[in-house]
Image 1 (cartoon, rainbow, N blue to C red):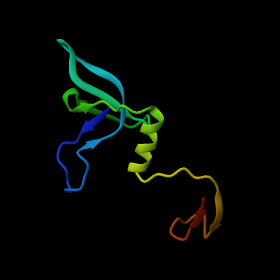
Image 2: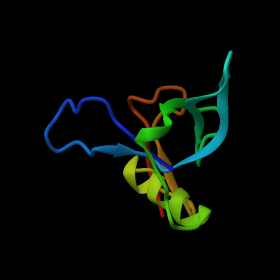
Image 3: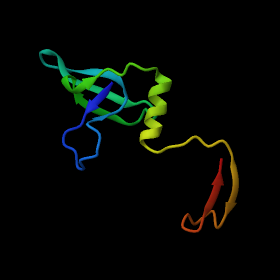
Image 4: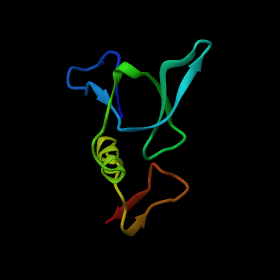
Length: 99
């Protein structure tokens, strides 16, 4: 699922966020509500709430969703740390070469 964002802070910002995995639909006193709880596909601790009318189905696989989420956040999978230079206790001076 992808969730509609409220207002964009920048004109180039995406209209939708996600993809997310649906966790539950909240209940109200009358029964089921229109609020859906979702979690990030790469971080199960990151949960968000959206109105069901703002959600759109993601038609890809879970692996495709995870890869797209990594690309959106500019996250990369490291294969190997090639070299570490600097003080490991001080991130300001630390330089790491990776593949």
